[in-house]
Image: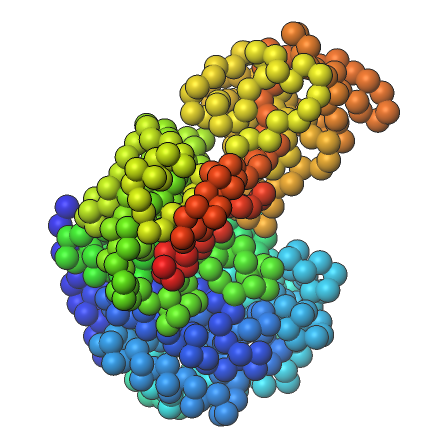
Length: 640
């Protein structure tokens, strides 16, 4: 497929972008506590600029101290912050890339931990993310006047700092959204009621910026819809866009959702790629200025198709650029198989909820770009890696990039380990793309791969490596209860891999993600599922993938029994204890989803027998994930 549209230039006002790929704004928590630009933030954005994007839009940058969305969010509320922003824009411009600053006030979604007070909003309607702590104070007319001035002054600072454009954030449940959306605005004064009145705050900001900065490029990000009853609809969003065009705005950036409909703001993998493109298509019909779209645009084909079909003039790509900063460059050069594909796991966004800095499951270098540079090894070594799961694959890739001679042995007839299993449940096929990426990279790097080869001390003696990296992973935990050895007991890995079949009535014993993914997989093929757990369910509802997974499982009729302890397995079912009483549950198959335990056997056998020995991934972690495994693989291989 050719990608001609993606690499056509485009103008935003008088600003020329060399291509139509824009890095979407994503919070990082890389700024200082005062909101200042840090070297870490510069390094992170420079890496994406080098990757070939036409423009970067910074993360939300608060214009007033009371509008801070998190403890280390970027700020532009004071002249003292301009110097740091100058360093950022200068570094990006050296990469021949444009950069825009997103102006922002979190409104009712301001973090109580960051502002130490109740937030402000158009009306006193709380944000569910913070509960009673976020019950906002209604802004007075005088306070609105002050905030208009804050936005205008922030735009002036952005211009002084060398930004090429600004983007005003007027969506996603934040302050300006609370005026625009009927869901956030119950005012009875000139800022409430009709759409014209609800737009007045934003209109005053734009008018003020135009007065100070003339033709300086202004973009506005709006919700194409709130995806909530009574909120902004796509028809109303088109009217908002037309009014913004009439005010002199140079481009409309379309997204969707708020904290209450967060799965539409940061779409999970259950949503189709480019899931918001119908919104920009409708808005584009209402205006003559450029319109962009954001929302799970992860593949080059999706991005190109959106522009070709006239649904948007340019695309805003976020998580895919976290995963692979060189995404645009690789697309332009036709190296699609070299792109590390984002799997929309939402770990990056999930960490922000926990007030942590952004990271990526698959890219170990995010936020550590300077420290993580891969350099040639001073001494070339023969490196044996035992295990072809995510930890072993990443270790092999990085070790080979450094020039080492790498031999990877995997006891199964395929690579991937838990990564391979992860690709089997519904809506997780994108993990297969990750596995294909590793297979391609290891082939290009001349890594020797031996399948059906379990590493033993004898194998190590035959190969005579200088370094052994043990990445043997983990094995499913099997509890010691009567009847556990019966034929009607299987592990989740045996089920997902197809090694064992299950009956029609299935009980899944577990409370976490794997239990629900296994239930989702089995219910898809018509099995009747009951989930039992000795505690409450441990799904993370702030993670949209897990929230939607639970909904799917429940909608398929799965029963969930909490505070239920399995005491014994019989030939016809299981005996459990619930509320102090024993009960019998009839089942054809009991599936164990009780976590895993490290497989340290090989590591223990090689201790003292190998000069340089490392253990990585789940073979040393009881609750390890792909994130920890890839981190281990990257940093271990980088230091040998």
